[in-house]
Image (cartoon, rainbow, N blue to C red; front, side):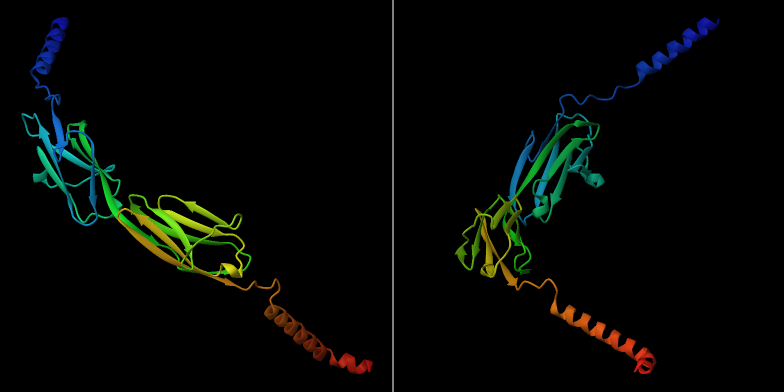
Length: 250
């Protein structure tokens, strides 16, 4: 009887499993973003908003969609998730350049389409404008530049192309930093240095005023004078404190 009951129980379990509906397959489902069925790059400029529209293809039922900005999920309203979903980036700025937006099928995240934003903009420069450097010290002029596409940079001194001197000038450049280093500055290095950045979308300039100051003495005269005054006052106080002994000796 026990074996019969066990067999009947197993049979009922399998019957229930067979009756359970299988989840619909995602095979054949496709997504498109702005009519692109594969990953793509969207080139645009600063300012005007960008609209991205994700659409489910070959679906026989309601399919939930998800949007991601990089690794972070984008919050969507309830009416903007099923079979078609739209997001808007506004206003478009420099921080959006190179960012990936991805639309995914909620129940099968392997079904997805990504778009990389290529935001193009002219050079935007920044950096400390005036530097006071003591003679024989090193000076560094840093011209920070953001641009897309990447720009070309030239340094000028007092409106003339800078002649680089070996072991005196050194250039360092990355996609966003243009640095001019001057070793052991002299009075002749005084002047206005201009960072000129040129790109297909426009040019940018920034002036840096280098002021070379006199070399400070190792022992400043003010400190020496102050020390002499302190010692003199200390000696005088000592004499006053011991005046009785001095008088006895005399």
